[in-house]
Length: 255
Image (cartoon, rainbow, N blue to C red):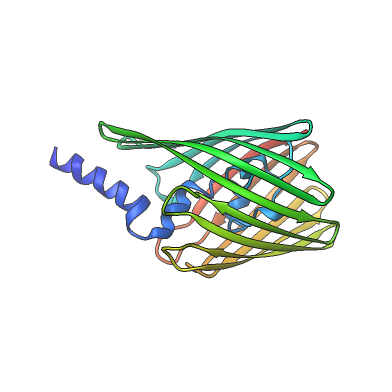
């Protein structure tokens, strides 16, 4: 009993207590978010509606996530988005599987566009269970974006009902059809602010390379996306200053 109790505490400690920024274990669960340090302006993945309601893409995506190389912890995700004029509706679930800790995030996102602007909101229902104790938490995200052929910007607020709420300002520049660049600044009231840079490059018609760097904590992300018709497969890794690599695989289709 003592060993089991210590095991439960250690898992919870790793996920949420050792450093506050480990909250990203349950937020950046898609391959593109992992590669781009959460800068969703360069993303075309339905899985990133978990972070931003104004992605503007339709499709379906399945993801597998192993945070910091911890073999006992796996996060699975299933996401979809489809147009219901005049809205885009996105829904999905992220599920963390562990014998001592369970976490799942079910969400519904709605967004609408007018001219070059898109506005949206997301409602999350989060379920957590440790041993015999379980609880539900409601949370919300809001975002407003502007995008034309060359430039774009986004104002986003995540986890507005919790202590982990984050305000993010992003901007992107599309140099040409094959290359885009973006930067973001994230303000977290109870933690250090973070600055990020990201790129997305099409090196050949079926291949896209995405990469990023963020300042707090210092992390690098790198991903390779393969497009086969409407189907895409993406694998990414992300470094950490103290822990092992985070691995994420996405398999999706656009429509």
